[in-house]
Length: 416
Image (tube, one colour):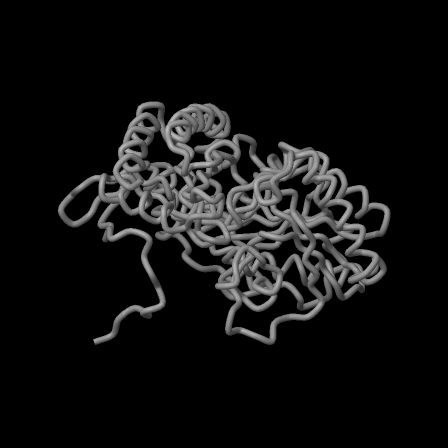
């Protein structure tokens, strides 16, 4: 009898049979508050009626129209709608299936457009599991251990993480920019550097936001040296942080934007956006793929945009995120083991440390497991898995946030 790989470890014991909004249900019809959203994917919640209707209609019309063979209407509609939400100047799209594939597409474009071999990423960043994406990932060794040799040409520079360094945000930012200059002086000279790859908020790295000064510093150095700034919005995009793009919090101006996860409310779709002048520098044949821009996924993405706009989900993420953060900070204030509550909008993390101040992944795991027992599904992240993260669907309501906060308080009390 065939089974799943034993390496696939589930974060919760739940076998989901159906989903509705921010809830999942098991075979016994027990209801769980899902504050994982498929790792930030089901942006409009499970089975939003508008998304379901769009996908069902499209399945009956055209499931797959390979988009380097023929064009199809959902793809064209999506591209047109993307023009309404993309940062200024980014007017060309290339679609693929996953975040990792989109990162590799951005890398390929950056190298071909600049003729330079190297890229600089930032410590704690997660960009994917495929060869190039894993080579650029430094949020944990598990994503590339036993996989060598990986892609050459990657240098890692510090991210401004105040909690890790034990400094203020200003001190961490000044250090990160100083070390970036050192990296450009000692490891990858500017004329050899094609791009900076950065997340506005570290995802797997522990839900650590960047800063306005750091992103401005990257932009200034990119402009000065002819380096491209690639902003990885795979997890932070589509309203997750309380703005449509996470980089908006910091005034980021990307040359290439990478998007995935919440793009199509659970259907596999990702993409990169760049200016026409930059995108046309891609070499012939360098962009393609069998499933990229799938018709059903594109229809779901258009419907996702409709829901985000009509239901005011970006503003809801900001409002419910503030409500949730206040509740999480109240719990943290009652437990010394929770040393930080951080993040933006509905992308919030709780960091656990032991009495000596060391990251405590075991405590985070106990609380996350107890929360699942009580009916609240959560995930961990961070280099030591010491951060429990809250990433509910953007449709989450005030009462559901209160319910989650109560379950979280009970889980922390019981597990610590």
